[in-house]
Length: 503
Image 1 (cartoon, rainbow, N blue to C red):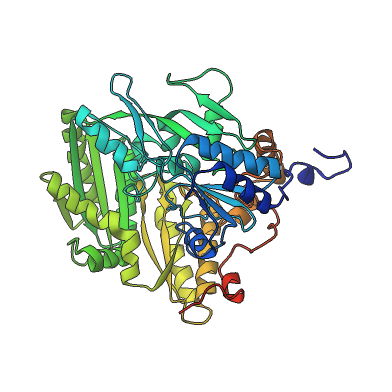
Image 2: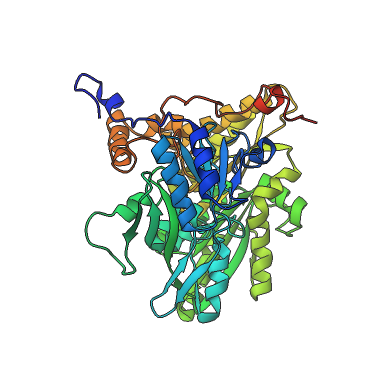
């Protein structure tokens, strides 16, 4: 990749495409059908960010792919011209993983929404990358199956995005993340070749390239078809809501449940501020005066669930729960989950702006980390709401702020970063299920050595030696030319060019 005198860390950074997007624009205008190519500056701005609204970059070009062939044509055009490309599904990511490149092409897969095959006997389904997560379960539930990974955004997020970010969800405590539920992927490599990773069989021989691709955040290519594993619907499901006076008590109950050898389908925790937001948004009716609530769900064979559910209730009571509600039916269960599922969006009811952070800690450190997090927020004058997957220590603190107050946005970003440092100090990770993206690339050296990062880059170079697949993500490399990702504090380039106004 370079001469021997080049430092190792520099040798292992792939070359970055420096070609002209004008060449790609002209070629795709000839090769793609009308309407598949967006070049209008105003329409391009529609795609300037994913779910992480603080980071915005307008892409140079957008391709609305309607099939795998169009994805391949777009990637080949980029490869031949050495132009960066970024794949995007529904755009619900929270780490800036689908943040466009200012001098590159954004390939949107949200129109590829066909479930191509459902095979109950094989417990498999074959889907397009733009298929919505929840639609897989809705299509397979009548046959007694469902798709287990369930991000909070499962009503709108795409399976292709789930694969790119190795998304999780409330029930991944028991069933594992997306990587556990994908058996093969058809993909377009950064050179424009169409290949298949994995098989329909449970385990493919040889190197686990499929496992490498899942969670690679679009840096190794674009998925065009995904075979997912279906999970048998459980015989019995039991759900409870337990109110506690403090997060310490709720955390202790969580540790007791897991420590007893019980593996619930989900254990979710919300603190007082998150409860306040959910009540304001959906009037979920959680216990009055609760400093924290746990939503605990068990599933499996009926006798096993009944036995363990009794144990769970007892442990909640022993660790200070002052109110326990047991869902009597599906309607009750939906009511319990309504507050938890709405929590992220609900925070908008109590704060004009917020940052969703994503970090992981050992479950036993829950109480200490939550206390230190609150102390940190109080010192910096912002509030932090917590709603997270307590069972596996996957935190989602929401840092609340008001952008109209000078400096508060910057303070919120500093607190958000300090929370990640806190997770690492307690032996955790910089991300659980949202990915690294643009948001956390600068945190990677805190968790990995230079040799670790070089090794990861070697893998990437094997797929993408030109560095054109979603550059600027995951790795703490210098930014590329064009618009600089980050919180915008200056006029947008479109404003300066007289092409847009801000009201």
